[in-house]
Length: 112
Length: 109
Image (cartoon, rainbow over all chains, first blue to last red; front, top):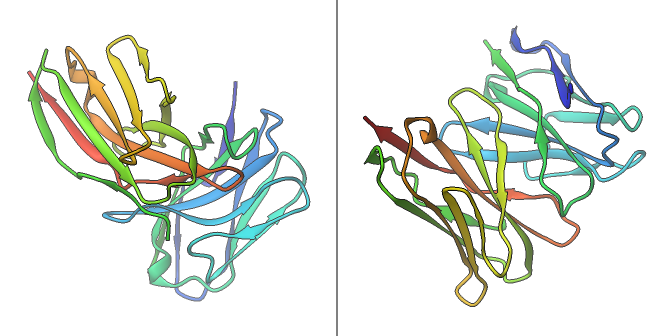
């Protein structure tokens, strides 16, 4: 029962470097999401994909891009990392909007 | 921004105590309501959905008051293992969930 798998778990980047966070779910869920969590700020939605082939901006999309590669996979890309993107990133999936989400275990990203 | 407000705490309670958290939401069109639990440095996990009629799961009771736009979580007979942050979550129909910032609970022996 893998659920939602995120890679990597930890990453340190230098300012200006790029990287892609990977997320895959094996629950046949239609919807997938990327959140970031910062101390005192709670979970903030970056991008989401309601279904395969669609993506939409969330509350804090600047500096990020996403790809819904297929029904299982939803990746998040930082093209030019900035220290303000230091955060914990969570991927989640759900059958649809009105159901609870299953989260991955997170990626702890530090940009120096 | 749709707002979900919670008292951040911390709530420090002794084992065996009853503790209640409230959460208010700003969007009267909200349709679905949940409580999530998040342990330190872990991902959030669904604790329970909140239904209009209220619902109970063991020591946990959730209630919804649509007129006043708040939901509550009651924990009876607190255990050390209940120590965590509890996230209030709401959404309108067909939109992503909106998470509150969480209420931190510490159960003390």
